[in-house]
Length: 276
Image (tube, rainbow, N blue to C red):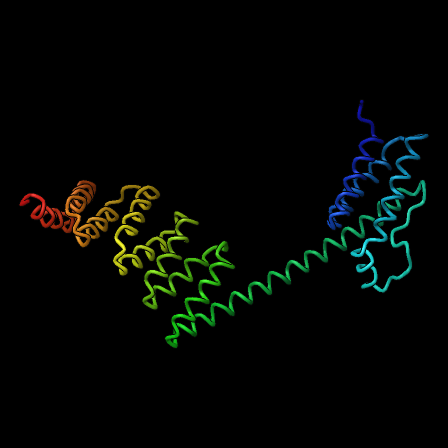
């Protein structure tokens, strides 16, 4: 069956009704507005025109009974129904009314969203302030619980995981800090500060396998930087993995012959390796 203007208009009205049934009022009005504008522009006659007009009237009866529409107009001290009127032939007038209502609803939704964002931001700041106060007063279990709550509720926001992790790191809660900072690095692999803090946290906790994984990620993300290789060599020495320490120090020295510490680590590690 060929698509006709009348068929497409009826489909838009059907989409509007479906959205209305789901409570998606702005989306519903947008679909209906498309239908009414198309109806105004198209040349539709006879039975097809009567069918489209009947579809419009049926939709508007549902719209005017919808609780969200009643609430919207009641808040504006409008109590006379129907709120949105339509008479056959006055499609342009209906389009203007729908466009105005849609603009009002979208403006209301933007305001509601902005207020919700403001409430959410205030809650985050309140939680962070309470957590820091707990850290400052030595109430570490309370501080950890609050910072974990911030991380769970706001962890998708840029910088939040790193902020929480750094606070825990400064308080000496190395494992807890490392966990959050590791998540921050996973979220933004090129966040070099979060990476450095995560390495520090797990190093202080002597979680060498975690440190190793972070260094390997750094090499993959930023390339084989000689300083990173040198730091890995130091870590392997402390971990007493002398073969790995020697290998990293050698690579660091090849990349930057001025790294005297790398040469010293090779000598130290070699003393363990070649005397076995």
